[in-house]
Image 1 (cartoon, rainbow, N blue to C red):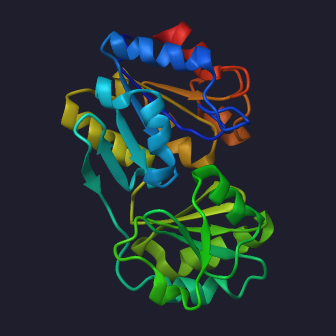
Image 2: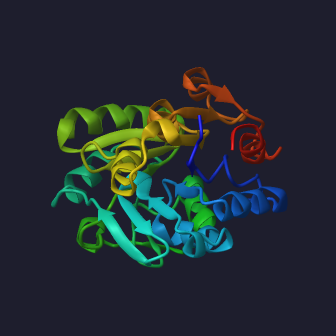
Length: 268
């Protein structure tokens, strides 16, 4: 198959443990773009947390795309324009907050333009999200009233056992009104209905005249499952969650061993 588009998760996939793109991987990604192939950064991060890596990869020069908020927003980097934006239904912040505050140690994050808003005071996993995205945390006095208008997602953070319990209650309460899933055992994504990376990638492919068979998707987390299963070649990193590796077509090297570079050399 002549693969024409490469969709990459960031944390645990494209970036190494230092949250950096290695020089050989960076050079290879720029090289395939020079050949006319497209690169998409597909991440659960907010847009601000993805754009510095998009700049590093020169997506604006080669017509690449940023898919942020797990597919809630797509940006055409060449045009600098949002071409798709799906937001949460109105009035979900208050009932979500009422559920989550029953679980000790859990926090909810909302995303401002340049900061994170914490509902309960940041825990270690909220601090991790802050570090990854270089966005400071502000603790809200009244979270539901301080959520920005038309949010793309909320993120619930905390210990995996508590996250698992809260996930069940949130799912039972909102049912099909929201899409609720874990990206990592300590991150619970609260998304608009039916929005995930695969949904938004398929929308993008249709708009640019490509098919899923022409796409390679690489990832390591639970929120990468749908795009890995949808792609012509679904790739799991060696450091991926076991279920992700089980569902993938191919398992590459780890994110600290230039696993994305290995995929480019083998298949592109």
